[in-house]
Each structure stands twice: as C-alpha cells, then as structure tokens.
Image (tube, rainbow, N blue to C red; front, side, top):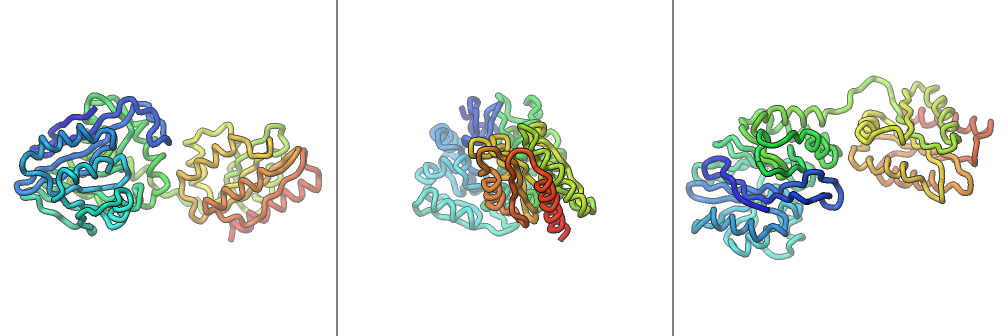
Length: 396
C-alpha cells in the first residue's frame, strides 16, 4: 500500500506501507509491520527524490513519482543508503528518468554498481556539500555505519527537515503518517536501535553531534512515523542510548553460566574466586534468568565475558548460542573472553564457544578448560587458577 502526503509545500512523502510484514529482512520481528519512507522535493529549477522503496512496491511508487514530478522529470535521486529496502526501485526510476544523477557517498556508489551492475550517472558528495534545487538546498552529512558504511543524512535547511535514513526510525506501520497521530511506538523505537544501531554506538554519537545543533522541525526517517511532535526528545534518546559505558575505575567481568545439573556452576564458584583474587569485580548471572536487553547492557558494560557451558549432545546448549547471538549487537573492542564447562559423554562445547568468541574479535588470553561431571578438588584448584589468569590478563 502506497500513497503521497505533502509534508511542506512541494515536499512530499511517497513511500509504501507494509502492514502485514512479520519479520524484517528475515531477521527482526515487526509486530506492527513497517514503512519504506521515500520523499520528493520540488525546487524552483530542479526536482530531487530522497531514496526509493522496496522492489515489490515499485509500480505504485513510480506512478506517484511521475504524477508529482510531471513534465519537469527528476534531476537527482539522493541515495542516503543503498540497502534494497531503500534502493529497490532505483533501477526503474533511472529507466524512466535516464538524465537523473544519483547522489550518494563513495561507498554508496561502490555498492550501487555491484547491486545493479549497470552504468549510472553518479555524484559523490563530501561532508557538508550542498546541491541547489532553486530556492531549496540539499545539504549532506556523512553518517557511516548508521548502519552501513554508505549512510548519509540529507538536510533541507529552508524547511528545517532532516532526512535521517535509518537513524531515528522504527518498524511501525499505521494508517497515519506522523508520530503525533500514531499510537505509542516507543518500544519499537528502542528495539530498532538495539537491533540496528547499537553495534555502532561511537558512530551514532558522531552523527548526533553533526545534527544536534541544526535547526530541525521534523526528522524524516526511512522507516516508521515521521517525527514532528518532539524532535529534540528523539535526538536526546539517541544520545542516551549511544552513551559510552561509565568507567567505574575497576575491571569488571560478566560470568554467564548454564548448568543443568549444577556441575558447571560449581566450577564457576572457583573461577570467580580466582577472578576476585585479582581485584576483578564479577557480575555472575544464569543465562536463563537474564532478559536480552539486560544481557546486552551487561556485555557492553563489562570488560570480559566468561562463558560457563556444559556439553549436551556434542554441542553447547541452545540458551548458550542464543546469548552469544546478542554479541553481534554490541561492540567487542578491547574485551576479553574465556570459556569453561563440564561434560559427561563428550566435551566439545568449550572449544566451539571459544571459536565463536574469537570469530567476534574477543581476545582469549587463557585456553578453555573442561572437566567430566562434578569437579574434583584438583579441578577446583585448576578453576581458581583459570580465573586468576584471566584476572591477571584483564588487569594488564
């Protein structure tokens, strides 16, 4: 379902509503569907599109472009981000308007040529560059890794509109377009940040710094409601959500345990003693008791992640892998990892989890250990030594 709405004089939304979408990109659940927000701006001399829509919505989108652009046609297609939910209709737009110039970042141009594999007229913008449409100015701010290397923001200063790409967005679709006309979507706003932006908090902080002092009446993201009720609140939310973890002055380790029969948790007791002997503050949690949001916060705010896993059916159990899947949503820079556990028939899990942590760029200073069934006195000593060595490495 698509349509058009005039946001300002000669500034239009012409995106698409996807009410029945249940999982975005087969990755993220969307309880309320999503929108693919695209825009058209008519200046006195030239017309620009800001992004397009996902490919299945191309026909209606192109009809709306043709109706709004009229005989003047389209001069520029601004591609704030090249992912297919933004650029899915681009090839058809360029077929209809071959004279149009694609405006994008340098990584964006590289991606577009590989996605579409045919020549196109492009203009690579630099930080702060402007394009004059005649009485309307497009100004560009590079925002790499929000959430791809190609991302940029587009600002229309005359109308105080910020086209923010994926930033400040949410997977939320309703019959109405603006945030002051829709039901509360704050949960989807935060979930979207955690799913998409959270791994790039440092880049989010850099991007927010570029726009927080601009004069902005509306933020027009690529997904979800258009923001006009309290623009500053959304900017403040991104500043808060992307804040760097507070430095407590002490090294901290997160000790995550899964222990069906208590043996792995027994090992954790002695590992913890070894860690604490080196002055490390230990946050110990059973994996099955921690919600995803809290677990992400703990992973992010601690200096080391220590996984305690049993081996079941020659593998680490599903809750361990589920916890590890959250690591892609946080930045592991400078963090240590370590793995230990118990086993009965076989002991593959520790090695498997070590490989996963190493693949995610965790530094593993101490080889993993595992013992069969309940730890003996010698095993207890080995666990303390394991924790002590990890603590030493953490203290540097």
